[in-house]
Structure formats: structure tokens, C-alpha cells
Length: 287
Image (cartoon, rainbow, N blue to C red; front, side, top):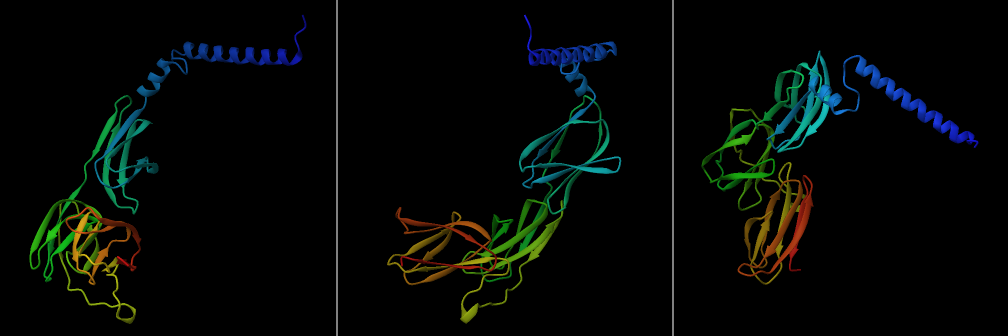
């Protein structure tokens, strides 16, 4: 029986590939090494390389840089409160740096990588202390990177320990009223930064209207209804507003969840609000 030309060509290619695979296996065996693709070959590769696991216990996304022989290579990033494995790194001395995306190096490790010996680097969050001196006549809430860390009473000084070190944004926001003070600040690991709140200058907007504090936004809430309203922003109560009255709440730029509720009832009206620096947002409730 005659075999079609295409079938003969396909069979020839198959036989050639089979012969090539057998010859590679023969060469590997003749050299005393395991055949590629086998579990023994996989074990051999792992024995000659190293895995490095990075455990990120900080609240920052950290960029991974590995320097070897004066050359630096970036291996992506490790998310906050997570871990990442760098696999099959060649043995030898390396320097592994973990940095924030604005270039601040939080961790630097000089490591001697040995084939077959995995390494784990536990990246503890470097901590700092913040001391806030409040000479103002209002109580203030203190926020670090938008997260509330505590309250400082009027005329008092409070100390906040175990804060994440690094480049942070500090905000002192009046518990009642529109006052908000913002300051970018590098908190050095193991150090105490003393922040004395300045007396803010009064500001007004066009035609005498309210103006957002520097670097902040402002929510102006007016109660046009007939009942007293409790104003809540991001699950934090900002006081009660009588009918016909208004209040102002400084906000950090970004998304916020705001709702007004009638005290003692389940009745509430909710809004999602996204603001930018310098913006004055208005909510006339009940209108």
C-alpha cells in the first residue's frame, strides 16, 4: 500500500524528533546528569539555586531590588501584609532592598545565597513615635495617612507609639468645627517626632464663603429638615445639627461615606462622596 506524501513527511518529522530526544537523554546520561524534564533534573536545578521568601509585615507596598556584582534588578513588588517568593536565584552574595514607590528604602539585607538553602526575610514594620502638642482651644483627632490614631484634648500633649515609620501625612482635625492642619513628615525609625500644632490663619472663600484647609477638602452640611440630625463621616460621629443650622467637616482628599441620621431611630440618608484637595462640597439635607 502506498503512503501519501504528507503522511510520510509527518512520520519523518516524528521520527526525527524522537531520535533527537533520545540522543539528548543519552548525552545527559553519559555526562552523569539527570535527563531534562525529569523530577531528578528538577531537583538538580533546585540544588544549584536558592529561593528567597519575603514576608511583608508593613502597611506599605514595597518594591524589590536585588543587587549582584554592582548590577541592580527589580523583581516587582510585595503587597502590604503579604508574602512573595523569589525563586531559583543563583548562589552568591546579593543585597536585597525593599523600598516604597517614592524611593525610600525601608529594609536593606546583605545575604549570602547558597544553593539548595532557602532564605526567609521577615520584614518587620519599622516604628516611630509621634508626640502632638495641642495649644489650641479645641480637641483634635490625629490621623496618620488618613487613619485615626487618637485624640488630643485642648491644651494637652499626647504621645502615640508604634506608628509606621517612613514618609507620612499627618492631620490634626478638630472634633467640632472646620479646623484641620496637615503636614507631610518623615517619621524616622526608632525616633520621636514632636509636632506642635500651629495656630491656623482664618481663611474665607469667594464672597466670604468657607474655604477648605490647605491640602484638604471641606464638607458643608446644612440641615434643612424639621428634626435634629446626627452627621456621621466614615463611621465617625461629627456631632448633631439642629434644624436650620449648618456644620463644616474637613476631609482628606479621596472617597468618603457620609450619612445623616435622626438620633434614636433607624432613619438615615447616606451619600458616597469623593473630594479633591481644595474642594468645598455641600449637602443640604431635607431639601
